[in-house]
Length: 112
Length: 117
Image (cartoon, one colour):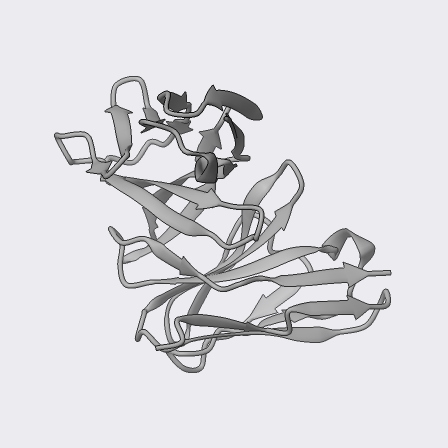
């Protein structure tokens, strides 16, 4: 049982480049979320999904796209990277409403 | 709009003493959940404790307890008998239902706890 996995662990992009952060979980969780963590800001919700085919925006969705074609995978796409997107990105999954979230190890992204 | 407020950016506590980390929240929903997570310097997020809005008793998990005061919309984390390994960042989070059956979880800015030997 791998839990929540994220790839890559580190990434450097140039402004304007695009990329996809991968997230997968093997716990058959319906709920998955993407957060970004900036110093002094805590974790801010980017997008979340309540099941395959269903996604919605969180607090800071601009510049990011998501899709959920399977229960297991929830990729986050940066369409045109900007320096303001330099952050640590966490993916999380949860069994249900009253249950804790399981977090991936994070992806540290730097945009130059 | 929902909001989680952690007013203590940093806290110091002496080893073996108890410490309270403050968290207030703002929601108009009746059904919600409150969580505390710990983030050590290694960066992973570790779940500590959960309190549902309809739970009448305060949640406890080992040395962690959640002081839930619904009318005041506060959900403070109490750590008893602090240990050096408790030095970390602590986040309060709230989960609300949205739409038809979904939910989203919002985090506070966090409190950094330093345990002194």
